[in-house]
Length: 165
Image (cartoon, rainbow, N blue to C red; front, side, top):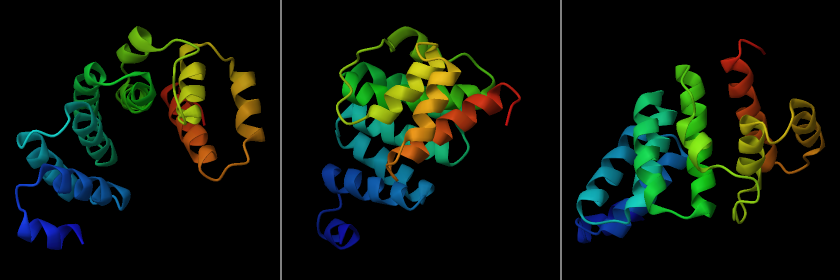
């Protein structure tokens, strides 16, 4: 649908942004990045585009580039989107053996996170606001098929960054 519409409206930044986001859901990262970069040049909202470009980079294994994009994104968003940015930036930092600088600068318990509760719980754990025991209890009790993978993946990357499985 988006591709057909883009044939009619090739310079529509919203359509490019939306198709780029759809490509991300199927891990078509190169296509996503191309649409998102083009949307950015056409004036799309910066925080959203930088965030999604960061996701594209992360899913492609380019963790340094992910961090760069998320560092750009954080200045254009509020806390609700910011917690998602912190999550992916932190995981990219762990994958590179770096300190999660955005986590240290922007995370605080009680952030206005909206529906991003799993991202917040992982960041609470990563920041030390939640102990490993508390976090593992949250992970074990999570029943949501959507929330559990976010928690488990964040935990897995955190453990891997410490040489643990």
